Length: 422
Ligand SMILES: Cc1cc2nc3c(=O)[nH]c(=O)nc-3n(C[C@H](O)[C@H](O)[C@H](O)COP(=O)(O)OP(=O)(O)OC[C@H]3O[C@@H](n4cnc5c(N)ncnc54)[C@H](O)[C@@H]3O)c2cc1C
Image 1 (tube, helix red, strand yellow):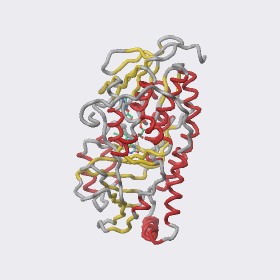
Image 2 (cartoon, rainbow, N blue to C red; image 1 turned 45 degrees about the horizontal axis):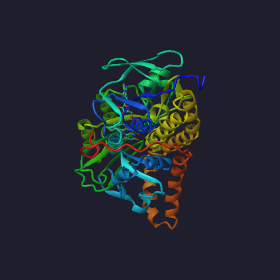
Image 3 (spheres, rainbow, N blue to C red; image 1 turned 90 degrees about the vertical axis):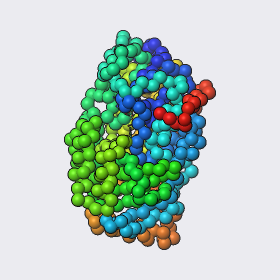
Image 4 (cartoon, helix red, strand yellow; image 1 turned 180 degrees about the horizontal axis):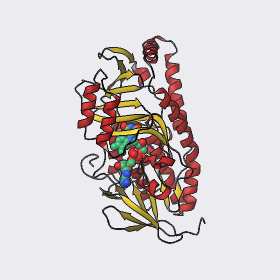
């Protein structure tokens, strides 16, 4: 019953990517004692470029990290479609490629993870290389006893699953992933590779029926990033079995031209290989007792939404703010967190489903039509209207939440040391 529970003061967060450190940041400012446990042995810095848009920009601003995000921005200039022989077929002009509304920043996922870690590590306990194995309520209205793969058992008032689409906390508290996951019909791999393409803030795309290969370099990054996407019904594999994921990727792109053989070799050698299905996580509720889910663990919208990172930042602000406003009463805070986030998440899930369908052309005919449209676009008088319409659709989803004010004491000082070192 709301109001009868002991107020929460200690919080364990599982996952140190985007949602976890962002929540840690706000909880620390609101006076909670926060521990973050991350399965990886160190901060994971891989991944593709991600967008911070709409309400998420406002959250980043309130965190005092917006300048850091903008300083580390990708500054992408143009995107070009190439054919199998590498010939440039259609280039999106900079004013369309970079069409953005006011509140829209783009950053490499790894750079954002570094910024969040740097802004929290002085006031938050980080435990790398460990994972939760069980969650047991200590007593009615009390906290949670947590056991770990490596560390000794500990008690916390609240446990937060910010451990991504394959969340362990969700499995332990709510059951197997399959019941919550909706496959959107495609897979994505992202990885670093040497920039032997001579790219400077430019992205190259090579489209094949049901497949897309991309490579680009962003501002200040000596390496390039590769992206391979393919349509497929749900595949069976363990999400931590990288050799099997590489085999699936190689089989999907076997015999394909352009630079795809080189990209496949690079994927195999990359230290930061990332592979996942495009899928949504759909749940009726995000909390159970003293356990609550955040970010992709609660409501993954897939990379097709372009909003996973933004939603993680916004959810962290809302959850921490409501816990502070409810003076640590988890039931009241979790109910308000869900009520505020539901509509925003629903709109972004809709966008994800729409974009997932449009991301890859199904046939050569469709690919040729898209190339033609892109070649014609710069000469169309209404090209800016088209660019603006696309940006507005995205922005509508990104702005679908009104942030409350949750006054918090002064921000943390970023930890000393090399900028954003892990
Ligand atoms: C290395 C990496 C690369 C990514 N690349 C892309 C990309 O290219 N494009 C894209 O759209 N999205 C990518 N994502 C996903 C993107 O970061 C999220 O959609 C979004 O930012 C929401 O973040 P999140 O913190 O909720 O989840 P995530 O970013 O998925 O983070 C979850 C964190 O929890 C950790 N974790 C998992 N299981 C456990 C466990 N049992 N115990 C403790 N910790 C655990 C993970 O290692 C990870 O650090 C990537 C995520 C990661 C981790």
